[in-house]
Length: 105
Image 1: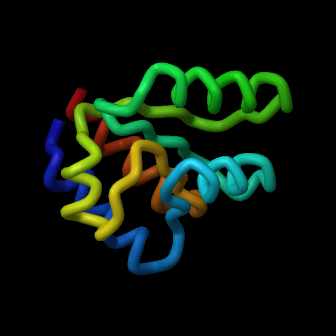
Image 2: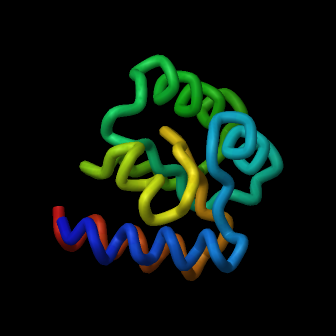
C-alpha cells in the first residue's frame, strides 16, 4: 500500500471539507447518509470498529469500510487532527481512496 498517496488524498479531502473526523462527527455523517467511505485507523479499538459496523448494519446502510495500515498519528500528520475513525463524504474522493488502498493491498 502506498501510504503517502492515500494520506495525501485524505489531506486533500480534509482541505476540501469532505471529511468527518472523530467518533461523533463520523457517526453523524453515517447516520445522515452523507458518508460514502468509512476508514478506521489500524490502531483504533475493536470496540469502535464494532460500534460503527453494527450501527451501519442495523440501519441498513451500504457504506464501504476500510481498515488500512494507517495509524492515528499518520492521519494526524496528513489531516491535522488525531482521529481513529473518519468518513469521506464525497463519492469521487471515496472512489479514488478506495482504488489507491485496494490496488496497493
